[in-house]
Amino acid sequence: MSEEQKQADNRARPTTSEFRAFVAEDWAPSDGATPQQRASAPFAAARREALSAAHPGDRLIIPAGGLKVRSNDCDYVFRPHSAFVHMSGLGADTEPDSVLVLEPNEAGGHDATIYFRPLAPRDSEEFFGDARYGEYWVGARPTLEEMEADTGLTARHIDEFIDAALKDAGDTTIRLVRDADRELTTDLDARRTAAGAEAEGLEAADDELAHTLSTLRMVKDEWEIEQMQAAVDATKVGFEAVIDDLDDAVAAGRGERWVEGVFGLHARHQGNGVGYDSICAAGDHANTLHWIKNTGEIKDGDLILLDAGVEVDSLFTADITRTLPVSGTFSDTQREVYDAVHEAQQAGIDAVRPGAKFSDVHAAAIAVIAEKLHGWGLLPDGVSVEDTLDKEHGQYHRRWMVHGTSHHLGIDVHDCAMATREEYIDGELKPGMVLTVEPGLYFKASDLKVPERFRGIGVRIEDDVVVTEDGCRNLSEHMPRSSAEVEAWIAEVRAR
Ligand code: GLY
Ligand code: MN
Ligand code: MN
Image 1: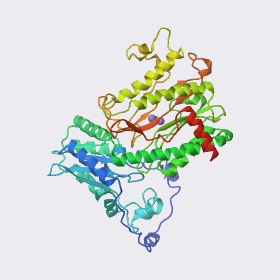
Image 2: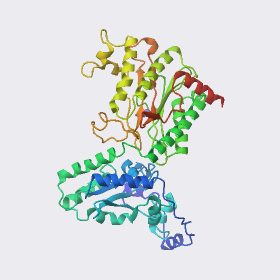
Image 3: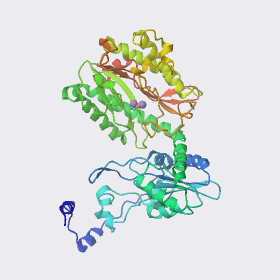
Image 4: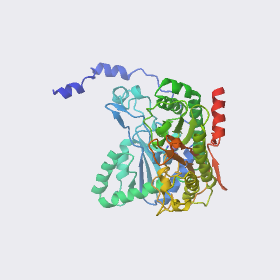
């Protein structure tokens, strides 16, 4: 036996057939209560109808994905693929290695089946012997009956999947969500090609499915908007816990990590966790747009930019930013920058209405940013606000706000990523769309083009809004935004 093999065996435990028989016996039956259908199920069914209508006659395969190794024999917490979540109605923890298949039927629609690993019986090898899937180690999975009751889908054992997926493969267009489970994709590519499909056409057919799935998420249904509101409400709790704990964060040292931990505690307590890594950026770190190292100190007198969102158990996430004065009060210069960003954000929010273009929101916000920068004399000599806003010849203002003002928000923080430019940036806003409005101004400590008093100040304000019939509703309206309201909020939370 090689040294490596000796090492690989280092945690093996002796088992005997007597022991195996012994662990398989005398377990009381599980409580066996059939679950109620989850509230998302009828909405997921309606989404599947829309997907079916977009791809008549095609077999549509939407994997959840499998467990992902974090290191050695430890996995990350499982999160199913977003398209699978949307089309199955399932959420946190459900269900590694499942695959949703929409099979074309004779009525011109599709029948939906979920293939998954149902709970293994207690006398199976898996129950006791499999540390990754076994009930003894990681808890019970649903049975086929429970999955059907929970989702309203037909449920089958995963062992039946390959035959179902490949049935009439030469004659049926099979479309697969490719990025959910890379191993499965490689396997199905080989099998589809062997069955006569053209290798070059596979990806194009699959990309069309990915595109449809992305665009079907642009307008949220009533249940999704409730989930978004729940995510925002949970996020408010996390922000208030951070505000309440800022003194401790300052005192503890490495305060950005403290803030990350406090927000993460509430995210994990109230939902599945954070919807993306929290940006906890004090002082000049706020000017590093994706500052997720969070290794810095927080000092009294600093601003702290907290960009964080709770992902609820249905896997919809909020995406909120507040920039808070650690002392409870903005300095004059901090307030000047903050108020400029707030004015830009309000202009952006005011531009959100049905019929407006998605890009109008950015145009409204960035016009204010450009005016402010011009007013401070930061644009090059002779460059007017109009000049800098010129897309071909200007854009000097982007030195201080390089990112867009908005993105779609939902199961993914940057939702609907496969929609085309025409549908997304140039698309019209419709009731039910959920977007962020998040302008900022970033004056790095090393930026010699700005007056010294601005250096090291970074501000972003980010809210989540839903387009309504006649404008928009700010889902995060209850989280104070103006500089005066933020100061009052900090004082109120600290006084609780
Ligand atoms: N938190 C990522 C973003 O605001 O887009
Ligand atoms: Mn955002
Ligand atoms: Mn954000």
